[in-house]
Length: 331
Image (cartoon, rainbow, N blue to C red; front, top):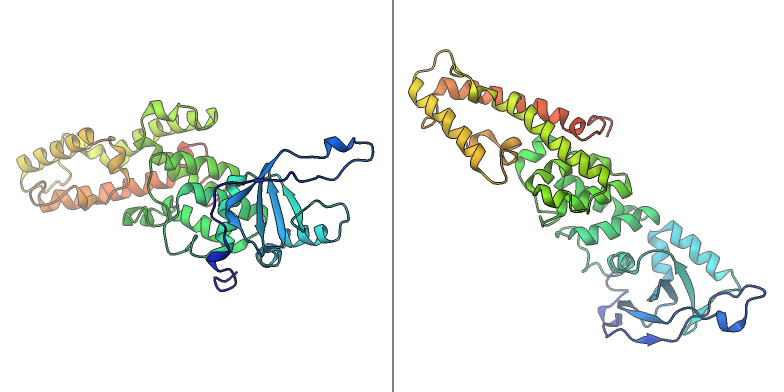
């Protein structure tokens, strides 16, 4: 639906107003007084005065252009065709009423994204609440372009490739807000987008244990999160940073043993004292926090870099298994 066909002046942005109750279809022996549904109110954000279809979700009604909705969704197209062919249909202001069992909050995001491209721009960040609403309903109503965009945003922020993590371009598609990992895990479970779960669980390591068990996640995911973080941290310490605790230097040809010994101590101290802890370094770029020649001689730096990067890749490959998930290829 183009902006030209839906000028913004057609959208009624007013205080919620009380609308007359909508009559639902009456069963054969039902008394007349039971026909009235609870009082409804207009959506203050999606109400086109020239719209020809009313959508009702719970007690909220939206007035939209049915033809435009049909263009994007074959499911909506079928529903609207059935609506036009039925004689037992409620009306508001001469418009047939399509009843949906979706949350009104979700429909606001979906209908605004479909009717006003200024609201949902592919090139701009979108918050996780908007993404969640749109992905759920885009899957349900087979709106392919919105589904693809929402999934691309989530996989960008919670990637399945280590190289994408190391670029560090997070927040570009979905702003990094407190609780984003929780919201993503919950959404991934609802929509079966399992590919984002390993890194989303990993990011929970930046959140306090008390928040993890606060109840937002399911009990099963709380257990997976906590146990997975313990297993992951142990594996990473051994594979990527085990050389820090060894008595010998990384390189047998170390040219400055005293400096390299102090360098190992500095790295270990930095990892231990940085909030929220070692997880800050697990999938970080090695050169960002270990810099020769101040910390290591050239020989030790080269060997330590190779050991770190190899261990980092090994643990990344194992990441899904720490949270009870299939391997990356299966996901």
